Image 1 (cartoon, rainbow, N blue to C red):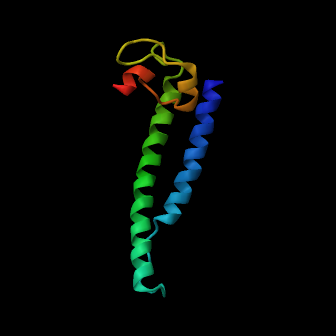
Image 2: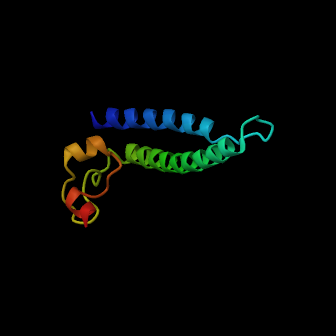
Length: 104
């Protein structure tokens, strides 16, 4: 079940990355938009580039979690060594800390 959930998260991140890559393409100077609109487009591009980096980082973490799912230490907090709650792993499969340790 958790493996399926991780694969689902990976698929969604890949879709998000494809969309963000389209949104971060360079804005052609020949594009006939006004100066204010061009500034808005440049600002939006910066925001989308940050979102793209975040999505790519999460995708890498999810892929790593998928390789570690069969390992003994998977699902254990790296700080206190307690089991990470199943609900947390279902929502954030790449978690390596329990809720208590993550809040510190």
